Image (cartoon, one colour):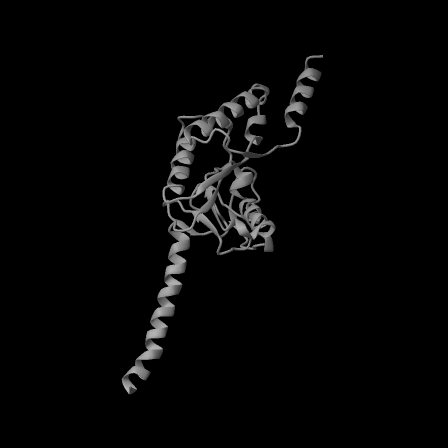
Length: 230
């Protein structure tokens, strides 16, 4: 009887520890159905919030992230991120730190988006974010067959390998295509082709695309061009 009383607390601790481990492992290893969102584009979605350039020399970058995390960007156990190594981990800012590796990443729109979705509908469950954005990239660099495109498709397929459903593509890109009038004119056609190929290659013909536009730069370019011809 003494032996049983002595062992009981120990057994309870073991069971509790094991239950916690299972819960964490289940969350990160696909046993729960995830609502998957692809994050793609350039720096606007990769995240530059809180990034400070300490250099005073034009064209020279000496950047660091200040580490400040606003409330809407705080981590949530129900929000996961597909790492650069294709494993699910708890999502924490900066989301693109191991994807957009040649730039200094900071706060982006991915975490506020996911937190807002969960706030409005907690029954959504687990959200899986798939960061794919790279700063400074143009739409031609995202063309089917290119490195960025193939990496995005590969990462998205890896995200669904253990279950889950791709709910939407969050696309925030376009500034790099305003440098020339020709690129600005071709942007719509190139973007539509990009979306068409993404839906085809993921076998999701009705995949929603949430796109953020960059004001009216294209129309400003056309205006400047017409004025210069006068």
